[in-house]
Length: 337
Image 1 (spheres, helix red, strand yellow):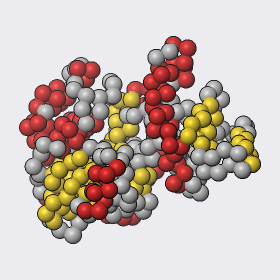
Image 2: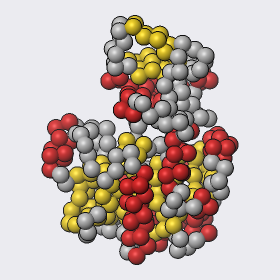
Image 3: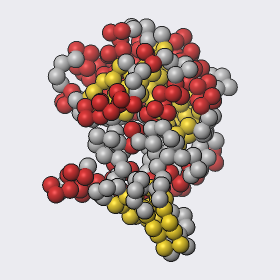
């Protein structure tokens, strides 16, 4: 049977001060009227029932996840964040106890998708292939720009008009390399969305990360000792049976506040009370009851909450994570995390 695993363990540090440990990015309406994780679940429901969806999150977020997703039965709390490989291994081990013949789609909780129908077709086709073949499928997005903030996957020989063999994975490139990738037509953005059967991913873990697979499957109290590693490094870059699905839908990982501007007009996290004079190109977010005013400024991110205000240039939005780390290092500011 088809299952969906939704990875929701991040803290969304680049969306501080709205995003906090108990209510991170994926549990906020960053783009759209509903939260990002609610949108993710609704997007998948036509092809995977809520009874076979699993959300893997952090302990302090479980209560809010349950409140936002009352139909989703399987909410799993990681003892601590260990990147995507342990997260996926844990989910696979638990699903295996319910359904040893499961086929799994594994997706982030916080992606923006421009066409839900196209997305479901790609995921559905991938689930069908994974049920029949020993493959590890990654959904590759057709790049629309030479983006340096995404990883890439190079496609090889065509399997069909919708699938290729994977040639290699490439981490975030510099600008010149990204432009070469875009021009070649052989590269796709690595969106962190995967599809495989339980048997195939189990065999891959047994081959490339046998200790992690054994430890997680035994469900012993060793999670803090597990290797902190992504599924790309742990499995996908090593395996010889990786297939790239043609993700021909609009996609955005909405990685920082500057990205919100690309989705202006779709509702979501914008200041409800904002007044400006000669202010252009700004991203403004705030809470009801507080007016944000701006005069003569350009390309700023301004985010106001009841206990913190962020001001930064849009070009520096990725560095908000650095600010969060600085706050974490000072006891006076830890209450803001």
